[in-house]
Amino acid sequence: MYSATTISEYLALLDEAIFELEEMAYCVGEEPDDELVDLAPHCQQIADYIKSLKQNIRRGDHKFGDKELEYVPLVRRLKNVLPFYGLLNDINRIHLCSDLCNSD
Image 1: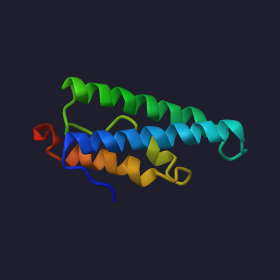
Image 2: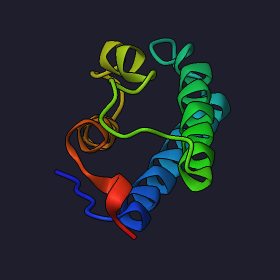
Image 3: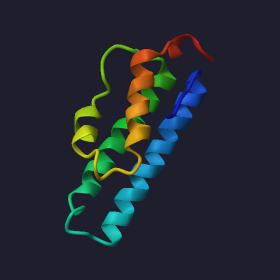
Image 4: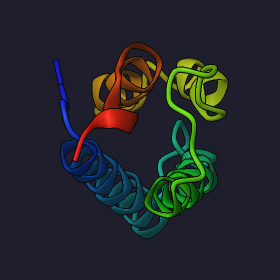
């Protein structure tokens, strides 16, 4: 289980998720697999959302604990094919349950 108690730690988790998503999108694109052929665009879509989330957090425009992150329904549908599902799920859990807006 992943955790973060500060904005910096949370941003590090977001960076890790972006890396994993973009790496998977690249690998699937390089060696297409019939089962995973549609996965690359989904991974890029989630990575783009997380990049936007990072920007909003850095600007102070993000409200933690408000509602589930927008990527959650897509991630749940892809749960069985994303080896880093736990990371993406924990990012949402931390977002919902934490008081990160008062840290750092």
